[in-house]
Image (cartoon, rainbow, N blue to C red; front, side):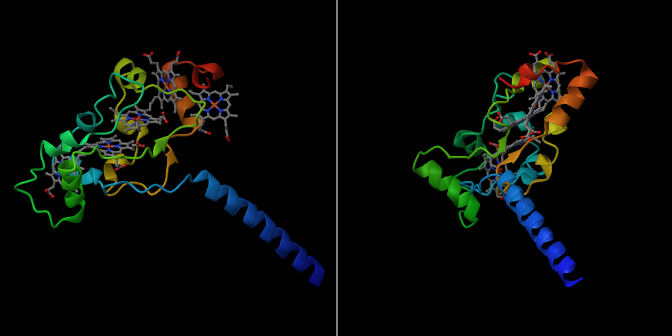
Length: 171
Ligand code: HEC
Ligand code: HEC
Ligand code: HEC
Ligand code: HEC
Ligand code: HEC
C-alpha cells in the first residue's frame, strides 16, 4: 500500500512539474514598458478612439504604437504637474527629444501572417473583437501574450467565408 501511495505521489509530482515548466514558457518573456500607460483613462476620460493612437491599423500590416507627439498634443509640458511619475517620464522623453521605446506585447507566432488592413478596412472589424480586454487595461501587460488561438481565427473565418487554407495564415 505504501509503495502505491508513494508511486502516485511521485507520478503527480512529475506531471505537475512538466505542466508548470510548459506553462512558464507559454507565458512569454517579461516586458517592462518605458511608461506605465493606462488604456482605460484614455478611452474613458480623454474619449479617444483606438485608431487615434494606433494610426496604421487601417492601412498597414502592423497597427503601430504612438510616438510622443501624439501624447504631447494633449499633455502640456509647461502646464501639467510633473509630480505624477508616469507623466514625468513622458516629459523626460520630450525634453531629451527621444522616441518612447514601447515594446511589442501583443503577438502571434512568427510564421503566422496577420494583416490589420485586411481585417480593419476590408473586413470592417472592430478592434475589440480580437483585443477583447484591451479597453479595461489600467496598466500594460507584464508579459508578451498571444492575441488569439488558431481556433479563434478559424471560427471567424468559417462564419465569414474567409480562407481556411493552412498556407493563407502559415507562410
Ligand atoms: C486626447 C488627449 C490625450 C492624449 C492624446 C493622451 N493623453 Fe494621457 N491623459 C489624458 C487625460 C484627459 C488624462 C486624465 C487626466 C490627467 O491625469 O491628466 C490622461 C492621463 C495620463 C496619465 C496619468 C494618468 C494615469 O492613470 O496614468 C499619463 C501617464 C498619460 N496620460 C500619458 C499619456 C501618454 C504616454 C500618451 C501618448 C501615448 C497620452 N497620455 C496621450 C489625455 C490624453
Ligand atoms: C492615447 C493613446 C492610445 C489609445 C487611445 C489606445 N492605445 Fe493601445 N497602446 C497605447 C500605448 C502607448 C501602448 C503601449 C503600452 C501598453 O502596452 O500599454 C499600447 C498598446 C496596445 C496594444 C499592445 C501593443 C503591442 O505592441 O503589443 C494593443 C493590442 C492595443 N494597444 C490596442 C488598443 C485598442 C484595441 C484600443 C482601443 C480600445 C487602444 N489600444 C487605444 C496607446 C493607446
Ligand atoms: C481580426 C483580429 C484583429 C483585429 C480586428 C484587430 N487586431 Fe490588432 N492584432 C491582432 C493580432 C493577431 C495581433 C498580433 C499580430 C502580430 O504579431 O503581427 C495584433 C497586434 C496588434 C498591435 C501590436 C502592435 C502592432 O503594431 O501591430 C496593436 C497596437 C493592435 N493590434 C491594435 C489594434 C487596433 C487599434 C485595432 C482596431 C483599429 C486592431 N488591432 C484590430 C488581431 C486583431
Ligand atoms: C486563419 C488562420 C489560420 C489557419 C487557416 C490555420 N492556422 Fe494554424 N495557427 C494560426 C495561429 C494564429 C496560430 C498560433 C496560435 C495558436 O497556437 O493557437 C497557429 C498555430 C498552429 C500550430 C502550432 C500549434 C501549437 O500548439 O504550437 C500548428 C501545428 C498549426 N497552426 C497548423 C495548422 C494547419 C495544419 C492548418 C491547416 C489545416 C492551419 N494551421 C491553419 C492560424 C491559422
Ligand atoms: C472576427 C473575425 C476574424 C478573425 C478573428 C480573424 N479573421 Fe482573418 N479574415 C476575416 C475576414 C472576414 C477576412 C476576409 C477579408 C477580406 O478580404 O475582405 C479575413 C482574411 C484573412 C486573411 C487573408 C486570406 C486570403 O484569402 O488571403 C488572412 C491571412 C487572415 N485573415 C489571417 C487571420 C489570422 C492569422 C487570424 C488570427 C490571428 C485571423 N485572420 C482572425 C475575419 C477574421
